[in-house]
Amino acid sequence: MPNALLLCEYPTLSGGEHSMLATLEGTRAARIDLAVIAPPEGPLADALAARSVEGVPFVFRDAGGNRLPQDRLRTELTRLLQRRRPDLLHANSLAMGRLSGPVAADLGLPSIAHLRDIVGLSGRAVADLNRHTRLLAVSQATRAFHVAQGVAVEKTHVLHNGVDLDRFHPRPKSGELHRELGLAREADLVAAIGQICLRKGQDVFVRAAAILAKKRPNAHYLIVGERWSDKPESRRFEQALRDAATGNLAGHLHFLGYRRDVDQVLGELSLLVHPARQEPLGRVLLEAAASGVAVAATDVGGTREIFTPDHEAARLVPPDDPDAMAAAVLELLDDEGFRASLAAAARRRAEVAFAAERATTGLLEHYRALIRP
Image (cartoon, rainbow, N blue to C red; front, top):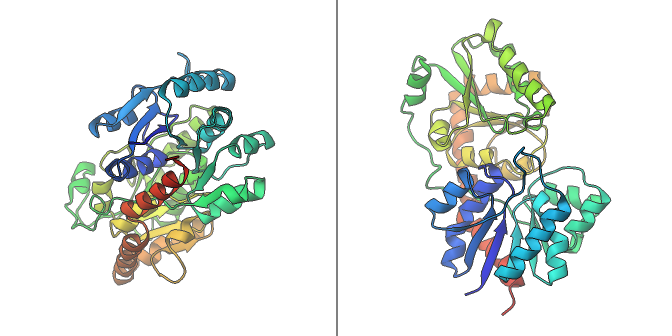
């Protein structure tokens, strides 16, 4: 049985980790022995243990939380790979792709790096990524961005993420989230879900909510997610969001933190708002589409690949435009029929193009192309 190692940097469960986990069962069913190199403790380690997937402990940070030097990490990774002798290495993020590219190439090990971010790269970073055998971008937009930076066009393929259509599916509202928040059952719940950071644009969401406060007094706005970065500017960004819960938004802006029950939360919403400034292929957009939830999102990155122009499945607006976002939210809240139409079209789109099984099949094709007989 061929064996592959997946390389993950963070102990947490964000979009990249969830996308990786969604393919594990199908990959193992195809008789590929998988183990995951990752920090030994945290939500990711727990999720792997629950799936009976071997976690290979690897420490990326010192006791103070500082990332260890790249050369030291490469030395440790080389030793681990020489000991494990896998048939394939799959780096699950751009950063892990940069770390492992030179290591895999020097060992003559077939390798893949997953490009899940749209970020500027140095020439050195591009060179590190290009040492992989193959690169997988999560959207055409992501591929085009990195190819323009010098990433090898002939090595770079597109593989859209998939979503579990059984876990994320349309469901009747239970009212549980209204009860948790102490709200009347008829209150509209409008949520932004994702890591709290400038890129995700929660500040635009809050500004749009302030515009809507007088027009829709029965609407409540939820920010679901945590801030992972401890940089001063990230802390200031979150504090500014919390400070906005005053005036017209007092009692109408709620911070729910990190939730393990996003599938249940989505089922209680009137609308999902995704105000991102950049988005390679938003996982929460796939989850909302599969859940049959209407979406108002910014037209950035790979979002238009989920909600294509020929499928009226979401309302897309320009980024950094709270007025346009407020207008889209108001339109959808005021027209229940149109909202239901978008939600139904989004579910059909998820079924056709973004089932987890489809993503797994695509990933296996890349694995088989690289694993030597």
